Image 1 (spheres, rainbow, N blue to C red):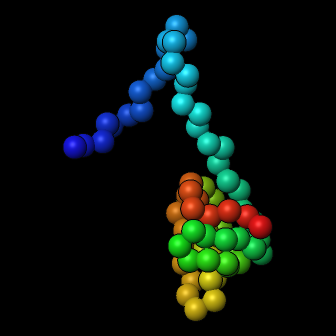
Image 2 (image 1 turned 135 degrees about the vertical axis):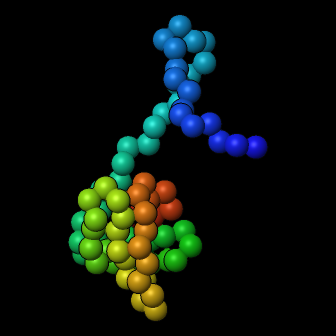
Length: 73
């Protein structure tokens, strides 16, 4: 099954609730973070709105925006 090209829009007269879009997460260099897969880490650098380079100890990973699995501690 293929994914639709664009999200469906919500009509004001619809009896169903509109989908809530999550607010984008903002990280800064030096922030301590946790990732669902990689664990604890520290943000090394930020590419504006694209990705964050995070040091997880044994490896450095480039985590792409919207950072769904990463939270700031």
